[in-house]
Image 1 (spheres, rainbow, N blue to C red):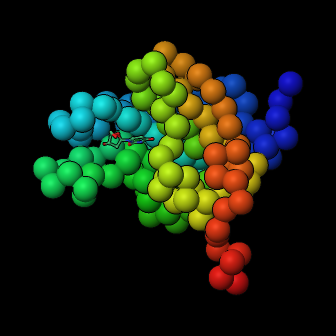
Image 2 (image 1 turned 90 degrees about the vertical axis):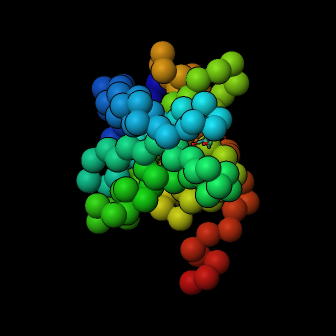
Length: 144
Ligand code: THU
C-alpha cells in the first residue's frame, strides 16, 4: 500500500531503487579513514533529480561532515530547494538513521511527511517520515 507522502514525492519502487544505487555509489567515494564507517546518501529534489553525498572526514575530527549534509548541499547547489525524499545507506547491525544535526538540515528543505529511507548496502531496511525523526521541530516558519 503506497504511503501518501510517497505519492506526493512521486516515489515508487523503481525510484527508491535508483536512489539506493546513487547512495551506494556516493558511499563508494566516502572519505572515512578515521571511523572506517562509510556512509552514502541520496536526496530527491522537486524536479525528480537525485543528488548524492558521502561522509567526508578530517584529521581535525570535528570538521568531518555527514553524507546527508553533502547530499543536501549538492541539491541546493544545483538550484533546487526541496528535498522530496532522502535515502541513507550505511553498514552494521544498527539502523543508520540521520544524526540529529542532519535531521535539522533536512527540516530546512523538507516537510513533516517527507520520507526518510534507511538502507544497508543490501537494500532498504526501514522508512520513517521526517516528523517521526524530528518531532516538534523548529524550522523556517518560526522566523517568518
Ligand atoms: N555519518 C554519516 O555520514 N551519516 C549518518 O547518518 C551517521 C554518521 C558519518 C559521520 C562520520 O564520518 C561517520 O559516519 C561515523 O560517525
